[in-house]
Image (cartoon, rainbow, N blue to C red):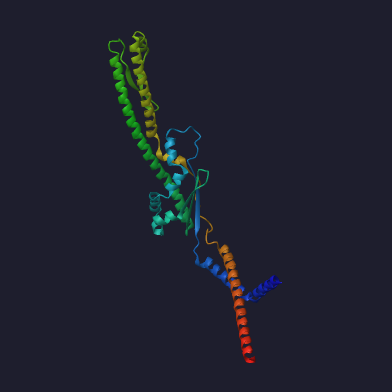
Length: 328
């Protein structure tokens, strides 16, 4: 019975305050509509998707190990928001005149690595649809050149390392050949000759180990043969090391860092000027205004009913007290 009375009171309160609820709801809807349509500036969002470090169909070279470390999706995503890259984009597109500062562009640019893929998405919001698309595409273009420069620095460093190693191995090789030629003195063996031969990988060292040397070794005593074999093995090992470093050096010297970066970074979806604003969502704002207005109106209606009932109870209580006083 009490529940029925309570439900009846609620319904009566709502019906009694229907004009208040309606008025507040309509007012909230109008305010949210006016703000959404006439006050809030439209914001447009441009988006692009990039495939980073895609798998190569042909057999990867030894440099891919170093390059892949520099062009992984995670590292590339971090590089996209680097101050050096942002500064290039601002200067090349003349964005300072439009109010795009370094900090503003870095904070507005959203970069995300798609989970379990080698895809990176780039998003940018702004008031000019053509400009936000232009900026996103400019970021991609300059990121390729910037990444190429970083790869070039790494390859240059590797070149210097290989060159030093080549010089070191060449010195050791010359010493080993000199040792061989000193050892052969008095043994009737011809001198061991080291010469260079041109190949597709540059100039490589070749050891002249002809049949004459091999035949003469058969006439040397066993102890001498062991010494010759040890030095020959050492010379062959040093020759292989030198030629290996030389091959890597020539490959690093001939490779195009920008070409590598361009091959590793591929914009599969370029940014286009958006046709409709991403915000404000006018219909959503109006719907929120209606809900807020209803809640506020119902709250006011119940407060009004509570205030009225409290006033009536207070008045009746005062009248009863006054009546008791008169009867006494």
